[in-house]
Image (cartoon, rainbow, N blue to C red; front, side, top):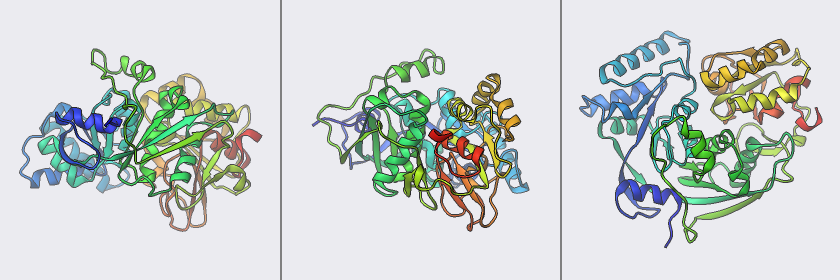
Length: 417
């Protein structure tokens, strides 16, 4: 019987053939901790008698959720983590680089056939590099820091086959929102979404990261793309000299489900409050008044996203009735956007451009909503209270839809601007 991508990765790392449903103790290739969940993980590590982490070179630390520190408690947490990094010899990216998921990818910490864990639910982003990457709780992370391994139940996989070419101003974010609407918020619980098909094969890394990032919004343990020439080109400069494993599912692999999508006629998608799977064509919510637009996050804070938004903006300015917040996902993405002249363009159009961080995504450091306000966001979650007041509303969309709506002051089909 053939194996899926995830089954092959676990079989390789465990040194024997394993199948979906088995519980295994598997070694971890990389562990990521940040300023919100890291302190608890370190305390659990200490409670377990941890003196030295399993391998400092395999632990990635950085701060992104509350940066710069927006409270004394946040500052104390970051101080605590800095002290731990110095003690353990862990390289700490601190708050200099940006959002954990973007930074981990661009610094070459993820590669095909690796098992990566992070104390953040959107760790599944690294599946874009062909890794089996999943978010874990801080208690589990404490165990990983000490032992370098963790118990896993090998997930079943759903094969997601995507065909067709996107229409103008429709892209990866619209695709993954439509998939979330189809599969549902719990439709892939503890399974892996294995993305395939001609659309994925021609999709650049930025789009693959967007798709894998939101696998968790369907309850999935992981999202993964078979590594190919796009993967190798991305990793060539980011992981020089490393062997990039060949990895592909067997033709007779057994899947829990197979889903097929054709993007040819796909319209821009919007997730309406207060669930990510409450997805509709943009036309169904067009005209909805908005108070704030956020373009950024680990889902859509890359240079390609800002190019898309800038093309929609054109020579116009943003509506004076809308607060527009633009936050690149990393220093690298910020500099690319800056050097292309897009930061200046957004500022002149009326946007507030912030340094790389999570920003309004989790309602942490800034950009909170007041009761009754409405946000349109390129991030990945629109739960009640996610970006501020529990009486506010959050809609999710693509950078193109966000930019078009920021111009008009209401949710707008980007194809009509």
